[in-house]
Image 1 (cartoon, rainbow, N blue to C red):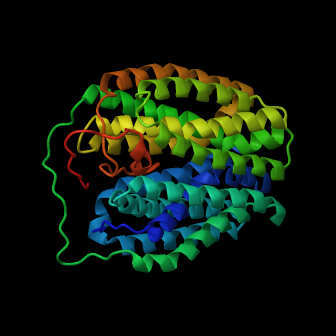
Image 2 (cartoon, one colour):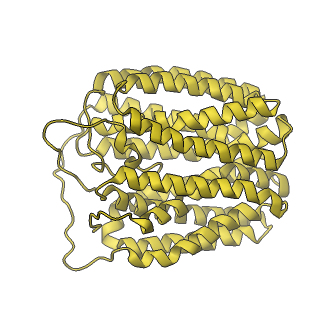
Image 3 (tube, rainbow, N blue to C red):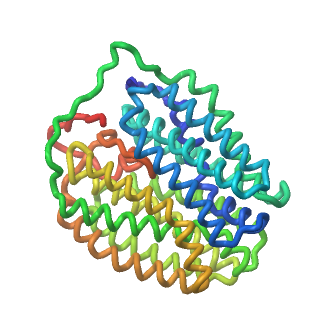
Length: 411
């Protein structure tokens, strides 16, 4: 369906940006729901979780249907749902309508992301395309974090920004392909999953890993404002810088490649992330808060790229990468609610300590899987994931393979 091209796939990059903007703006979205509406911190976190869960559900339901429905049609459906959902939620103060709008908009974001990830995986250089997508969404999210505090209080500004982004991307969907009568669908022979034990361990631990990361991300805005006593402008600036260093982390993972294998980046990286979470959650001043958030956002994409590369190595057809990526999406969706509940019951510092201990514990089996299966390498573009961060981001995590080139498989 998607033709390989040597030019930059700007429609896919723009669609990627529109789909991923909502998770990137989660802290300010949840924080403003908490501050401007009759919602408790836990309830606001639940709305954020509902948005992300709806986005993950779109990935589960639609990943295998992109070619059947057609990328252009599906992308337009997703963008329309995003405009309708986020736009309606931005201009109402009725809590049920806001929740419904967040769920509809989240499904639209997930639909756009599914189409973008499917198209990027078919590119000749998926790593370059996904890096451009990360660059665009990081830059746009950073601009929103810097701008929104100057536009007044209320929950509508970040939601409106997501809706306007989806609306702006709509004209570019005209360059996406449509299904034809001669479209050939790839058929993959059904066989049992290899490395079942390692795959199940990795899927389970990555769900917990993503849950811990997004538990902190979902309440980071409140930590900065309520505990570190920073202004929304300052917190937004910290997030903007942190998002920029996250992109540096992705580029760094590509440059490092397989020089250290996978076990060291996954195990040691997860332990360092645990320390960053403790630092950020216990922050009472700008220096501590900024150091924790920036260091964490730098390490997070590096470790994630190696984890997803490891999942890809467990099955040459990429089925474990799909399953592991899907469980990661579920952890991402549950994160804001878990963070809100933990922080409300135990306080931010205790929440950080609990999450850090959990990360250190699950780092052990994750590292064990990496040691067992870390030698198998994959080429960029051989995996297509549902939900979460596209596997195309992992393109550089496996180094430069030698020997026969594996066949590209489309799911």
